[in-house]
Amino acid sequence: MAPAHRLVKIPDGLAPADAVASINSHLTAYHGLIDRAQLAAGDRVLVLGANGAVGKACVQIARHNGAHVFTVVRAGTALNITDTATDTHLSVAPEALKDGLRQMLGKQGADIVVDPVGDLYTEPAVRNLAWRGRLLVIGFAAGQIPKIPTNLLLLKGASIMGVYCGGLLIQETGHFTRQMAEMFDLMAQGILTPSPHETWPGRQFADIWERFSSAPRGTKVLLGFRAPDFHGIRSNDPSYPRSHSGH
Image 1 (tube, rainbow, N blue to C red):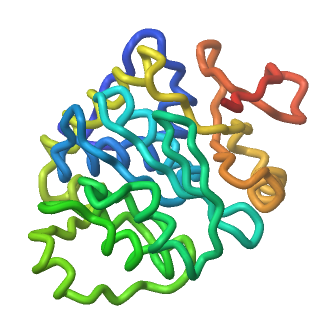
Image 2: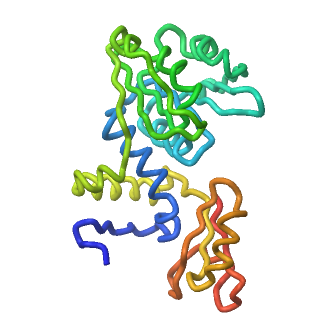
């Protein structure tokens, strides 16, 4: 059983399955922007990999807090850069990302860069940080762990911040539970959209494993239990209600 000091009440209006499916991505986004980067209204926020679960949550949190949001999304062999405030788009080859970001962000650059992808995305984004900019290192979904020239940080008075909720849970449990409760409140208010997910009865492990391997990318597969108030059940078992929460 989980110790009591790690428990967080799910607020009214938020389905338990929605909460469970979104903890990793949405808490990472909240911890990164609100706690680590100290997001403020008017900040210019660049979200790399904005079509992923963490990226989508970061876009929603940043907008809610009055930030000016720019996004980068891979589209085939190109990268699409978008200024979400003006709905202006620019498509560039990966090797032209630095210049594309400069064109979209201007000399002012980005106050915060959200980076869950790493690889070839990171250095061009760092080169487009503003003075006192903050790079949030969240993951390396694109493959390689990048090597960042530290002279760029010196010249920009910039900071690199690691965002790791697992470490926050162990090192600062009170902050972890408080931030999770605050993030759940945003979900209950409809500010944060839950991640797509399906819930299967836990005893159907073979079916669960097969579905885990074939579910659409980004869809969480949850283990369920027999309870009348548990939402989002999807199963081949006729005794379970059929539904799918894909937001």
